[in-house]
Image (tube, rainbow, N blue to C red; front, side, top):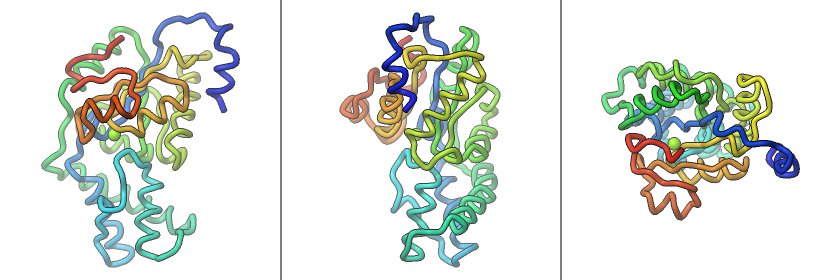
Length: 237
Ligand SMILES: [Mg+2]
């Protein structure tokens, strides 16, 4: 809805250059080494007595709400109630703090911290766009002390729909900025086709980073406006 409003008014807005950059988390800034999947298994084990392997049911870039719903549906045989989903999301978060802390495969992806530092120095505002719940996002970034770079975000706890949570992130960017921001003043950075789709749905260009499961060609095919191999290459800005 916002994007269409912008499109109508775009001609009247003077470009002031790039203001804010929105980063995905998993596969873009960090890899948790499977900590998210293990947290889901522990949560399902506690509530239903089965260590459900959520990786068999979910795709990369899905929101926590989508992942929890799919898991519950496979477990219960029906669409979960809001209460059933809320409980699993809460239990998942509870275990995530532990699985992130203990994950041997956790690492910050190549070039991430140096890039964030350089973007802050250049005066850009940095935000998060993540299917993780807001608390889950902060848990995942805390271990590497990366939360300090981000002043706003849109999260899986804002909407189960990645397109919608991108709109939420943009609204919060405007609050943090203290004024209106048009799509040309924003840039998304992500590692999956879903990141590209959500950015484009909001009218924002997307840098695809081939640092996880998607190759450069996959991201090009998904419509990414720019493609880089890792954040070490820097952003095309
Ligand atoms: Mg990702």
